[in-house]
Image (tube, rainbow, N blue to C red):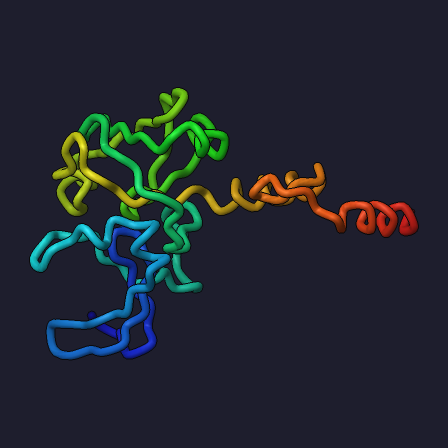
Length: 184
């Protein structure tokens, strides 16, 4: 990986990992239990094709949406590309909007055709040929990163309504309200 060194970030199927060892034609990363629990990385075998990407440079063009490499969950392919449909579960669908951003195995895509537990993305021939998405079949597991803006908005709204992202009541809500009231 050109310009990579120990400590650099690399995304594997959309999951940000840190290079801990590097040699000619190879590199290694440590993977935490949290990462294994939320990604498809534990299902990979030596030689499996993956989507591999270096982080975006801050001084370059922005060719998609903000993708952090912080995978939220594993989805299941319901229908293969070019009309790729992925099931993520109804408990996550509120974070998606028609024509909103979604990341599937590290590929920034536009979601549409939303139903109660799945979404569709159009995988153009170029994307199908240069990523793993063209080879994904029904039942395959894919990494999903929800749009970070949607996650932050959800968290902010949850805190204002008195419940956290997990639905737990927040005792600081009253204090926040008193602070806001005094500022007016």
